Length: 237
Image (cartoon, rainbow, N blue to C red; front, side, top):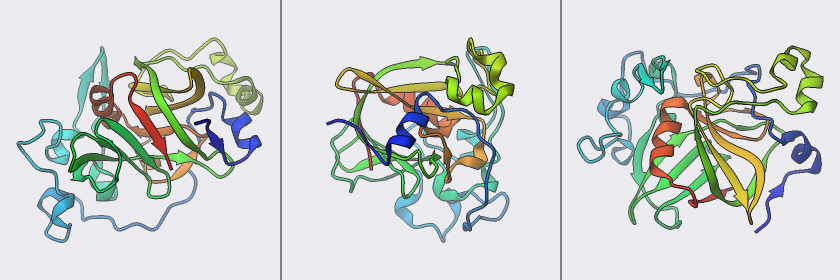
């Protein structure tokens, strides 16, 4: 099924435009006290608590979001205690109705799900496209890259002359707009120019502020990258 874009303007401006954008506004969210982990907080509903010991990648927030070395780069620790607990990686019941080994992006709730079992899924917080850049549809992961380079589209360079130096591509690294991993979405063999990718801007998770691409914490995109092979179906609602 072909991608459906909110409008043609958003589609044209969204081409390859996954760059870092200024943070705008703050959504009113319930923030846990500093140092409180959802895994040990009684106010969190039991089904939202990660199940320690079942999945080595679902542990405490301190372990999942600590500083890591990856591919010769150092990813700093994520200040998870400043985030809404809902957007931290966790296991949830699979009540989605989507098949095993598929990815669902819920742009309204700002969640991504990897369905790995008939009754369970891994949920991640995401940042989504801002007004005018939203998109929905079905695709597959066409290919994946570890520490990808990023090339701003011509239109973005015209809007932001400071990006001229990256016209030939911004080298990989922790501050690259595509982050530590990128999953490239294809529809009927055609590159949609939209990506699931990492970001160093942890404050953008749970917000609508990107140029169309879906961004995850670098720690989380690495986890999703390792779970979802090429050919995995992706549905964006």
